[in-house]
Amino acid sequence: MLYPLDYVAEPANLASFRQEIRAFLNAELAGMPTEQKARSWMGSDIEFSKKLAKKGWLGLTIPKSHGGTDQDFFTRFVLSEELLASGAPVAAHWIADRQSAPLIMRYGTPEQQAFYVPRICQAEAFFCIGMSEPNSGSDLASIRTNAQPNEGGWLLNGSKIWTTYAHQCHYMIALVRTSGESADRHTGLSQIIVDLKLPGVTIKPIVDMSGDAHFTEVFFDNVQLAPEALIGSEGQGWEQCTAELAFERSGPERIYSSMALLNAWVDEVRAAGVDDDETLALLGDLLGEMSALRGLSLAVTQRLVDGHSPAVEASVVKDYGTDFEQRLIRCISEWLGARPHFPVSGGLLRALAYLEQMGVTFSLRGGTREILRGIIARGLALR
Ligand SMILES: Cc1cc2nc3c(=O)[nH]c(=O)nc-3n(C[C@H](O)[C@H](O)[C@H](O)COP(=O)(O)OP(=O)(O)OC[C@H]3O[C@@H](n4cnc5c(N)ncnc54)[C@H](O)[C@@H]3O)c2cc1C
Image (cartoon, rainbow, N blue to C red; front, side, top):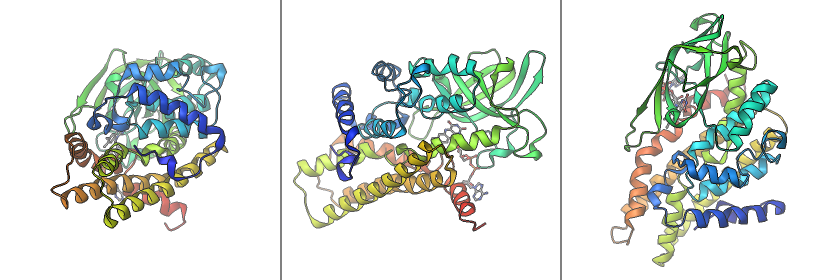
């Protein structure tokens, strides 16, 4: 098995933590089929998330006062890397831990922080991201779902689409229009927390090309929300959302989505004693690129540690990282295609088949390639 960190230096103080995680994962995931590991951070197992919470590995960067362990982003980076490298089924808690808890800690009221964040750290509150809508994906500012102020708080109407695991989540943080009209673009947008059990919420799973049903359509029909559903300030939703996307786009999950395939391929190449120049060159090429990407992702982590919202840098990581994840699938597919007599296992072939179907979405989810490149171009003052 390959571990990303075997090829670059790591901070010494995190080495023992990394070994502890590895030992835990080796025991927990023993015997898990390769094609299941290939689901990577789209694989979901609520009991596994609860076990991580028991270890104190959710909310790693959250203050102890709110149920976390008050560590830095680098410690969390190491944990994320190990989870991704091993193909652990982390989807249930991933979004809440990655972006909802930090968002609530940054913009929420003390009451919201006290109510939601400890439950996130215990794997008792899972969150989904309610940004995209039918006809408003890349052009997110044109969303039409709206929350009108009323006597009870906010009356929510509209719909969201492609919402990952809404059917397993307790809450959605939704970007909605709270004043003005679609044409007002960034003005008048706010973020609200929606309890997905409320009357008027309907969730319909969507089956993807590989047969999995991880994302959903979510409909809101006169959903009455309390005044405290608003998170942050009314009308500041766009700025808050942009800050949230930096967490979403910069992490190691934008590099390692195809790691289960790489690991399985390397294991089988080794077992078969293949060491021709072409194979070694391909392996060196992939690992070299992965190490460079890891350096970029760590650099963005440093910016987050320093309290910045590195939207442009995060877009570079996501664009380059997802390109790598997709190239890896093509390279291994071509390598196997050129060697029809290689004794490949069924598990590796099923992982490859899954990733060949799913890999196209890597550069769509979290913002498409064209949109990211537009952000990068603006950051470089090219447009
Ligand atoms: C697996 C998966 C999980 C997802 N999970 C979530 C989730 O949990 N929550 C959520 O809110 N959303 C989620 N999404 C939705 C995702 O964010 C959108 O699919 C994405 O933002 C693109 O929007 P769209 O599908 O409407 O495509 P469109 O915006 O219609 O884009 C279609 C094509 O046109 C290109 N394009 C659009 N505008 C421009 C432009 N101005 N310049 C150049 N090219 C342009 C795009 O790059 C793309 O290639 C998920 C998507 C996937 C695939």
